[in-house]
Amino acid sequence: MAVEIFMPKMSDHMEAGEVIGWLAQEGDGVSKGQVIMEVMTDKAVAELESPASGILKGIRAGVEAGAQVPTGEIMAYIAQPDEAVPTLPSLGHGGAPKVELDTPPPSSAGPVPVEPGGVRAAPAVRRLAKELGIDLAQIRGTGPEGQIGMEDVHAFAEAQRRVAPAAVEEEGEWLDLTPIQRLTGQRMVESAQQVPQFTLTVGADMTNALWLREALADRVAARTGDRLSITALLVKVVAEALRRYPRANASFEAGRIRLHRSVNVGVAVGTDRGPVVPVIRGANQRSVVEIAVELSTLQEKAHRMCLGPEDLSDGTFTISNLGMYGIDRFQALVNPPQGAILAVGRIVKTPMGMPDDTVALRPMMALTLSVDHRCMDGVQGARFLAELRACLERPYFALF
Image (cartoon, rainbow, N blue to C red; front, side):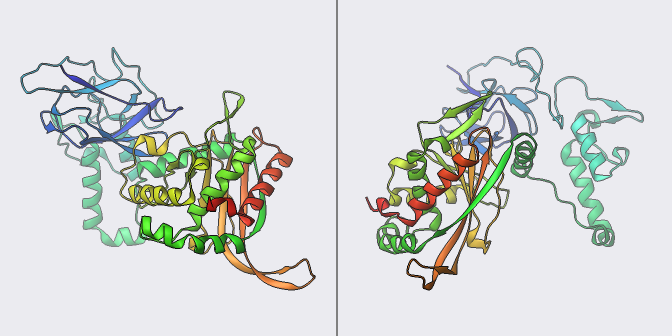
């Protein structure tokens, strides 16, 4: 019996996924677990695996690069070589509701609009050409009946760059946003415009945290082959602070505050294609060594862009650490619907007044908390940040 391939719901708030591209073609033999498609979710690019072994059949018309597919919609089938599969209605017609986009995707469903002069191109292709300053009439389409596709526009633009390098040098180079960069930009615009947020900053004395890092160095190196990172230690400390102060482990959804039972800490990771935020689930119930091992695995998967839905969903709090890049302190935008995000700077030896009125150099680190005011007010945010600093300055619980 044919097995359906459908758009999975990869997070609580995902309503549709954007097709990045098929990695297998109609009629190809595939194995169960083989990656057959890349999909952009509401969080990052994810790889969709084949649910069974067999032949990829019945790919739905319109399910192509740039198409938005509602969650739960069937996109194709995995069947046996001699097995027939149903013919699915074109995406956006009949069985599937059409999803409106800021940038309409190309679609093979229905006739392609024809401009005066006989130019055939989908709306998304016309918009791309307009953004690149290209006259579609100059392009020879390689699609059916001379239809111009995205690849034709990009090829023409590249040819122009090679022919006129001086113009490129004068005007600068144009770079297309990756799907992750576009998604991140959209979410940050949403955060800046729709989330009433404020920031609070404290300095934490890292003396004991650095001692703990050295104490656990051998155990972590034996499991990961690397030193215990400050980020891994932060995940453990933040998880403990969230356990002690659950109001910070919240999100703002449908006009209400949701207090989460699970402590799932997301860690922002920079990649060549843009930032992603893999999630360490149940961080408050894990040892710092276990966290270090999982964080190392997630970071490696992030750089290879092979994170799955389970790696990216259900985060309840986010950490963004730029200290390793020499940044002293910064402010991060809240990642909605989460109620808060922690921005972490580098450790700097700083003169500090001691209880005995002497002055000593202490390794200090700036912690900047950005808070959705609907989840926590200023006093509540300050209390959580004080709790976090206390946990970081006395992190001995992480030994057990």
